[in-house]
Structures are given as C-alpha cells and as structure tokens.
Image 1 (cartoon, helix red, strand yellow):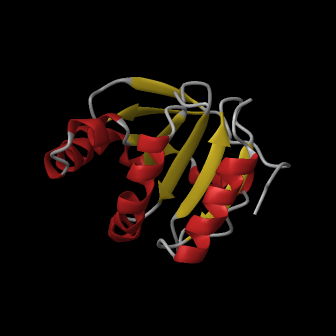
Image 2: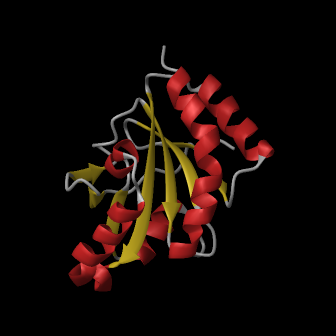
Image 3: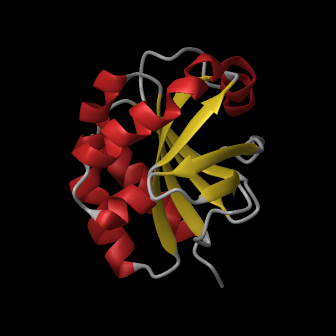
Length: 158
C-alpha cells in the first residue's frame, strides 16, 4: 500500500563494518527496501524476505536492501558485544555492510514510522528523499511481495 504521507525519520546508526549512516540521507539506492526488526527472534522473519529481495535487487541497479536491527539507547554501552555477535553470525560481507544497527529512543522512531508496537518486523520501501512509498509487516508472503513489486513498478525512476 502506498504511504505518501510518512517519511523515514532522521536517525544515526552504524553498519556491521563500522561505517556511520545518517538515515535516510545515506541510503544508497534510489529506492531502498528497509527491514526494521526490534527483537532478536525477529531475524527469522527478516530471513524469510531475503531470498525474495535479492533477485529484485539484482534486476534493479537502483534498489538497495537494508536490515535495521533497532535497539533501545540503554544497549549502547554493549554495542561492541551486540554488533560483534551479529557480525560473527553473518558470513556475507555485503549483508554485514547493509545491516545498520540503531541504538535509539524507539518510541519517537516508531511513532514517525506509524508502527504501533514492536511485535512484528516492518518492511518499508523508502526513496532517496526518505518518503515511504510502501510498507508491510511480518514475514514474507506472496501478497506482500506482490505489493512491493507493484510499488517498485509504479515508483520506478524516470
């Protein structure tokens, strides 16, 4: 579903290779699929999307995929341990580079994204300026992928 009224909020995070990102400005694609997870076990839901998103990105040079594990600020002191554990569990260097951990005050972030709770992952299509073009929640489904593909087609760069 299109979501032309929402914008991705300004947040800062670091990917698992140590690079700092100021989002949404540092998203590298003309369009970006952003998978936001709030709890460790939600990685399973993120992983259901991966085999379906990689072919889309391979077909479209302007499309990037990002994973945003989103933790509360209280975990910032444990960043080295947490990020190190994630880095160790992700053998693919491209996935590590596209995994940006956010240590933020989650309530304003969720409000800005119109995410009511942290019970599910949220998958967003965000353009270069931060406009949210499409969204879904939860694990991959054929219906959600069809909606993403439709939004990608209707929001293709000219």
